[in-house]
Image 1 (cartoon, chains in turn yellow, brown):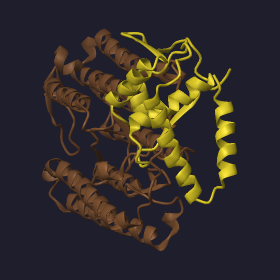
Image 2 (cartoon, rainbow over the protein chains, first blue to last red):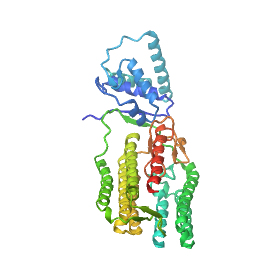
Image 3 (cartoon, rainbow over the protein chains, first blue to last red):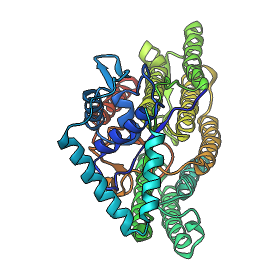
Image 4 (cartoon, rainbow over the protein chains, first blue to last red):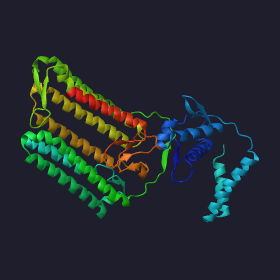
Length: 131
Length: 324
């Protein structure tokens, strides 16, 4: 039997907990480790295990549902659904991704990682999380 | 009888002296430290100072009981025991303050499995029904031997003299058992609530097992007290049985808790008031592993904590009515 994937959060990282949960879950969803039909832990259980407020987990589930990854039905919890490939993101969204990547790349460069190294890392990651 | 009384206070003192050992290796007086900190000079000095204060308090209490007139022993005994405990709590807090600068940073990272597997209680939980069977058996025996119970029975809750007298009525005969039934039910409820209301960890089965073991002690002690009038059981074997049963429970729990092999629950240090009271409104958990001692403590920012405490107060209040 496959072990359930584990989600990690670091309250000291400065990144809001809701964002950490969304990012962590999205990686598993894109990689297919959380396949359609998979039921996620209840908001209450996940909040207790992560030591964060119920509303934070509920908000992360809601946002992922809005992205089309989850189905939230009252009393049934959160279930992963098959998500149709979304249309090409609009200019504004593409610009947002570019800005976020720019900041990350700048940080990596400032820590001495070469441009080739960053490109290889990004390529490998993009291939790994192919839907 | 005086020897028994002294033994009882020696036992209390011994339990209080063992407090620094009744926790994980990564904690000392509720302060997160490195596992080898206990062997350092600061760690050893803190333990020695705590034990010196507790030993002096216990010795002073025993001395007071030995020297006071025998008619005052029963009156003096509860404040002496309470005083020893209060001094131990103050000594604990003193060491907590002294060791706080040595606290190590606990990584705040948490992980949770994305699993919906049911959080089942451990298989041994059925043992929790045993104490109720013990209480039921004693009640049945008393019912079947009603005529053997004296019309007026001594309620011997004092060391030097009977605490009072009760008539052979339902309340007089079964009161002790009913109170124990309430107490065992509450303990079991707390144990199960602790299982579901705490984060998944290796300490959960240890704590639940310890609570179930304590319910056996409560039921066994109450059985012996309730059967006292029929069998004429003296007070001292009851106390000895209780003490003898509690020692292995404490030793086994302390041994298991100190070697759990998993990291400390990364609860924020600033949410531990005085090292022992956990108050974290951002954490939805109801029970957290204690920082000082064995078992759980409540997250006092959770409203269910206060509902549970109200239930406990209700049990104690009805206990007074049943035992009056």
